[in-house]
Length: 102
Image (tube, rainbow, N blue to C red; front, side):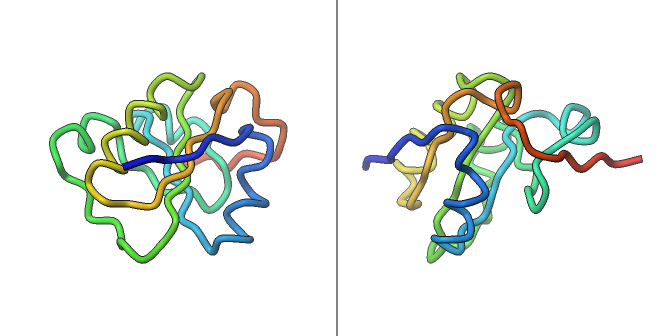
């Protein structure tokens, strides 16, 4: 299966256009320190172990810290049959507001 790549700066636009789910594939601690609004956390380690549980009828937009983890997640999720958009650049290159958990 294939997936497409977009720049991280376009993630919110693409999520709205596609009515997609934004997935942060970093670990829980990193997610808590700051993540893209509306994102859910599904660590790459869970994806690698097949613990996904995302709806298959939605576009899944994945991101990580700097791009490598999301690329791996996109490959795995697309092999599982998900419609995936990978974001290039990671959260380090994202310029929008972040949500933080306290």
